[in-house]
Length: 126
Image (cartoon, rainbow, N blue to C red; front, top):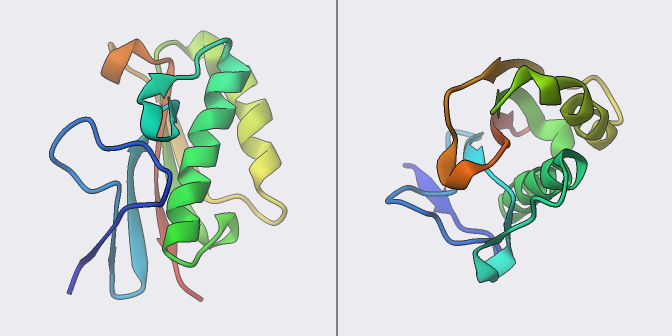
């Protein structure tokens, strides 16, 4: 049976979806943007801060499910421009002490609320 995950102190979803869903030991994380806690404000001072906020939001979801970044096996990074690729990678890489998960990074025509980066993922227990 699937279990929706709503992290304490996390931003509320912008549409009808669960921030994450766990089923059979797998956690599917919806795309995270730079929303700050329950305020609904965006942290977009620069691409490094924006990416840090996104990764912190990913971490909140993992923690709410009793997991951490080591449980991530797959991520997708959506960028408003490939010009952000290097800066996003510099921040993203700091969150993994062991082998990082498989992933792809793609530039898209637009992201929710005009953000520059959105990251989704799949994590597995064990």
